[in-house]
Image (cartoon, rainbow, N blue to C red; front, side, top):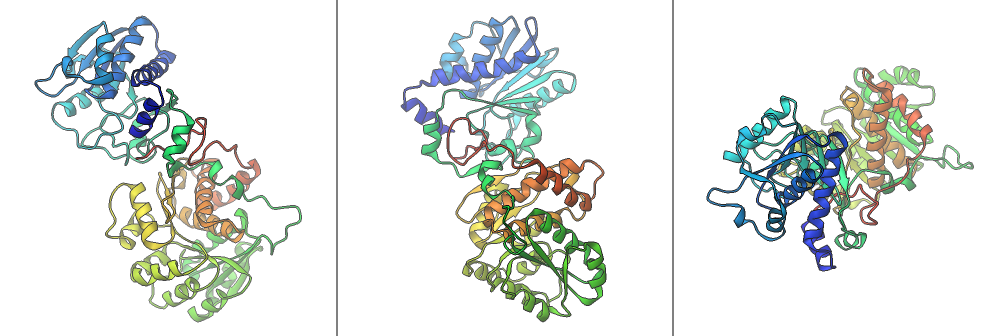
Length: 506
């Protein structure tokens, strides 16, 4: 965003104009709910976010609000020490400015948080921490809190709380959302999020060419699982799901059903003999093939028509499992490695990653946080950074699961999924997700796009299934997701100003 500002200013739009536009955008959002006579306090810091705050205070006062500015500056500094456009905004303010103290928020209907912006790179403590605590306490007593750009204390790149952070009712950000708006816990601090265009044009976005985006249709609209009128089961692709024995075959059954619904023309479930009858009775549409041992499974994975395989759900943790996974990694089909397959790979990561990088077909790894820590123990940082680093290290598309699922490609592209729901926090939900990816891969979709689309479909299925649903019903809801069709595409990694899902990164 710093570069976007700089390029825009170099192109002839002044920093003062950008600040004015930002301030008016926030004031407009406040005025949707409140009007003249409302008591408001604007908490300003010393940077450009504080400058935005002075503009907001001026506009609200012009519109009849009773406004004061609470100015939080380092000890020994005064408003005269402000620099650049923030100093100009302060001089244009003709109202009351007081040193920021916790008591200033008492009795206020509106609190505007312009203390820090998205560029916070240190933990908040001391007096600023006390001010944030006072803002949150006032909110608990009924004040409505509006954050400028990002709630103060939230790291714009990671969504992490840096010591302490404002909990806002509404947040207004500019030009593009930041990762901290989408990644947890930042997302839960933002409240309702508004995106304002303040004069930064599409050419700026094209020049910056960001590689992170909110997961949305324009990234995968061409991969939507619509079957052509002249398609048949073989043209739609064959997928194999490897099952564990009877007591753990439920995971494979869920994955297989999801793969069928998501686009595969045929789904074979390879299962130990003791589970054949149970799996066959689950869905008549399954092709069930007994695999008496891992050698037999490896043979099934070598069938020439096989376009994708899902390995891991309920597969088993014994040492005899890895040879079958190794055989699959040496094959030509696209792969989803989930659950037990990830644990197997974590025991021998060098071999697993070498096999992934040596193959032509795509591999999607789908770890949750615990599995990720075992497979990539040396990778740290934000969720976005970790997923990207893991993709580069492994050579696979990495789908790091959670309410803020991140999907990363080895080339650095990444998307953050935002339509997850608590409905998905149920046993078997991850097996459904693995199956959706497998079905899309079987239908010929590229690995990254298949993983991103699958994450979105999974979230939408959870929303449709609704509270109280179990994984079986989430898989069944895929029918309704597909019946609604592909939503309108509005986002790309780089493009016009209307494409609002792009996430601004450095």
